[in-house]
Each structure stands twice: as structure tokens, then as C-alpha cells.
Length: 364
Ligand code: NAI
Image (cartoon, rainbow, N blue to C red):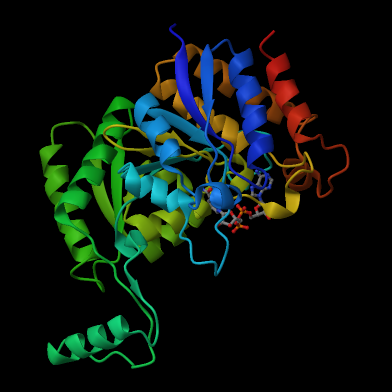
């Protein structure tokens, strides 16, 4: 296989440690990679005046593929999430979050094999917000009232929830294409169309239209209300296959799904657009574990498995996945979080890099 140039964003908090573990595992699996390291986040603010320097975006645009560690979004400092900005700038409209059971994680459920496809660019995450007391909020409140559309309390802050026909069409098509390419049987559109008629109602209508286009594909279609979906996921998660959701529900439901399969330390993700793809775990920077060689790099390593499949390195992807499964099911060399779930105590757990070493040892 040819050499791959991949942008690597280590991130902050536990990011540098888990991306180091991931990088060592990928290299040991025999993939020829040149990592183009690009720093983003609060730590580069002083140097570049922005948490997302243009060089980072240029690197990803050039290489088409990036993998990242989590990046902290400081609360109340005025800068919006680098993670959200990356998705917007590169139009990474599809967020793919598989949740599958791996024996040995101590997860509450076996037999879960769900793929969550979350719309990544609109909905309440579009970032169109009006601060309480601002002129914009005031004007909007007056506008809404003048239209007879309802009354908003004058002391409200407001976030808008735009959902478009084009945005919905491409995400639902993505879900069907992913289902077909991966031999999956069903796509479930998740919404709250009974209440939010002009946003989620539109999402449902367009999802049904797209499902019609795929009528002969062998992939079944159904829709579910988001609250019922959450209950069903906890009751009988094995009934679901591919879920497609607007941004906010996708965010929440993918954490729920991560909980079904053993927690955030295990759950991988990918943000995919027509041009580029950025792979990253579902979890955040877990600052309280930063620099302690404690964090579980599984989610980061499984994100690399998604990436390796994406770049055509299927053999290496299978090798890494098999290694992760073997080390987890043997249960001897696992990080604190898995050990605690399995035994109720962290005694005998290993560190981030020792766990990566155990995976690498399975390649011999
Ligand atoms: P978090 O996911 O960082 O941590 C929540 C808890 O989950 C941690 O305290 C820890 O107990 C556990 N955890 C998470 N990852 C783990 C791992 N790999 N191994 C072992 N345990 C793990 O969520 P939180 O605390 O809400 O966010 C912290 C920061 O991360 C925030 O600034 C947030 O904005 C950011 N964040 C960044 C994301 C990204 O870069 N894509 C995604 C989510 C959050």
C-alpha cells in the first residue's frame, strides 16, 4: 500500500496521550503513514490569535484525512468549540458514530451493533444565538410577536433551530449509502415531528422522500420519535441498525449508545464530508485525567480503525480491531475505567501506553 499523509491533531487534556497510543498501534499494524501534526485549541490562542489556525484547515484540505484527539471548549471565554468550527469549515456534514458491543468491556448489553448518523451542520448547533438582553434578542422578540407567531418572554435568550431540505436530504442519503455499503438492513429516522412541525416535521418528510428513492435497495426504513427511541434503546437496543438524526438528538443519542456498549472510553467517531474526513472519539478531553497515563485510548484507536477502512487499509483495520477485542476480552491489561466496570475496583489496571503495548503484542 502507498504511503498515506494524514493530519494529526493531538488536541489537549488526555488528547496527546491517547493519540500517541493510537499512532503507535497504527504504525505497528504496518501502515505507512506520515503524520502531519497540526495543533489547535486554547493552547495555540496566544501564538495564532485563534484556536483554529488556518494552517490546520489547509493541512486537512490537502490531505483529505485527519485524526484528532479531543479539544477542550473553555466555558465562558467567548470562543466557540474548535470541534464544531472544524465540522462547519470543512462541511463535514455526516457524523458517524458506531456503537458495537465488545466482550470484556463489562458493558450492560451484548449484541448491540448500531450506527448513528448525526447531521453535523445545522439544527440548534448552527450557532445562531441571541444573548438575553441584547438588541438582537429584543428585535427578534418583537418580530415574532408582530407576526402573531407567539409571545417570547422579554428576558429570554434565544437559539435558533434551522433544518433545511438540502441538509436533510444529504444526511439521509448518506445514511442509506452507508447502510448499503456495509450490508446493513434498516435506517431509522429519529425526530420530534409531532411537536416541532417546521423543523423536525421537515426532517421527517424529506427522510421519507429519500427512503422512497431507496425503495428497491433492500434497506428498510422506519421513523421513531426521539424520546421513544431513547426508551427503546435501553429496552431492546438490538432492534436498531442505522439511526439518522438531526444534530442535537444525534449528539445526545450517541452518548446514550456509548453507554450501552461500555462508556465513552470505547466509542469512536468520524466526521465526513464530500471532500474530507476527520476521525475522533465521541468523548471529550477529560481534563482531570490529563497527563496521568490513565485514560482509555480505545475510542481513539477505534476511530483509527474507521479511518483505516476509509483510506482502504482494510487489512490493518481488521488487525487493529481484532487486537482491541482480544486485549479487552482477556481483561488482564485494561485501563482503569474498564477494570472498574468489570470488577468494581481499579486494582490491577494498566496505563494508556501499556494497554497500547498489549494491543501491539497481539500483532506478533
Ligand atoms: P469528557 O468526555 O471529556 O469526560 C467525561 C468523563 O468521561 C470523564 O471525566 C471521564 O470520567 C470519562 N472519560 C472520557 N473519556 C475517557 C477516556 N478516554 N478514558 C477514560 N475515561 C474517559 O466530557 P466533558 O467533561 O463533558 O468535557 C471535557 C471537555 O472536552 C469540554 O471542554 C468539552 O467541551 C470537550 N469535548 C470535546 C470533544 C471533542 O473534542 N470532540 C467532545 C466532547 C467534549
